[in-house]
Image (cartoon, rainbow, N blue to C red; front, side, top):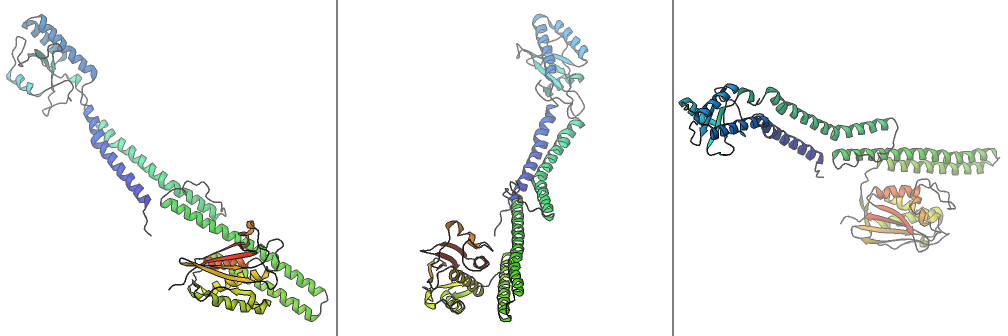
Length: 447
């Protein structure tokens, strides 16, 4: 049978999702964090914008010499190069730009750009336009060392590329542990409890409700535990019933031996009680074998009418039931695919049960009809029948309904049902026109 392996796909999706998240952390979020460390702080941008506003005010209210004095004062205060330029990048002070200073203007940066040292370890140059007349002039200065963003530090790199991925890997491990090890731990504890004799079912277990391999394992465990519970229950019931049923004939034998019966009557009583005990043991062992071993029975094409004919001959010989009262309405076309011995035993048990519960020499009828690939057979008697509530109970081992005639042990119908089910069939009881009707659904013979 094809299996979908849902647990495999869950783990695969979890790992793929983790890998994609890790890639995003390293190349997306990590890069963003790195870049954010190269931007000026907001307070530093405000300070530099204030310098540009001061330069614009000096330019608007004073002459070139005033602009030059302000420029030199700021340059000394910040310990860096400062220039006040017009829209054509010409000096608005009295000192013109040197060729070296002009070359730096090619790499000017704006306030909202990332800031870092150049390859020659030189601080960047920042251009800040006048706030009120941006096309008339600008303040250009080499960024002071104190305002340079820290950039990517080893600690930042360790956090973005080491600590955070490790935390996510830990989360993945915890998720895998919760998804795999926790259910396995629960199953291990249940197995240990089972070994200790605790056969309580896995009622409400979340593992058994899962739709993956672990859920299948939990349900298989529960099925195994259920089989063990049934086997132990059947064994205990078998021991209790055998103890009771065997003790009764032994008690009768003891009474008979002390009652002064003649040798002939004592031998007859002994033979009858031994025969009953042997039949009880044989039927009990047969039922236990069918319940525990579930043997694979080799099927063959069997004509139902032929089996019925052999069974009614034996029933007539043993019980004296008239042959004409055991009616078969089937012909040779009714052919089923079953294990001959098991089918014959099941049908014999049903027939004996019908004879035991029917009025003397009343009619017992076998009929049937074809339904697709199966035959539905019916054995109906004219006995008192069974109450609706007891139609299923009569198949329980060792069950004898109150007021039921006969001296059976309540095993015949249980053995019959087990034998029919092992061959892929069904056996159930229903109310007949007057008495009880036993219904058998069996696979039709292979053509």
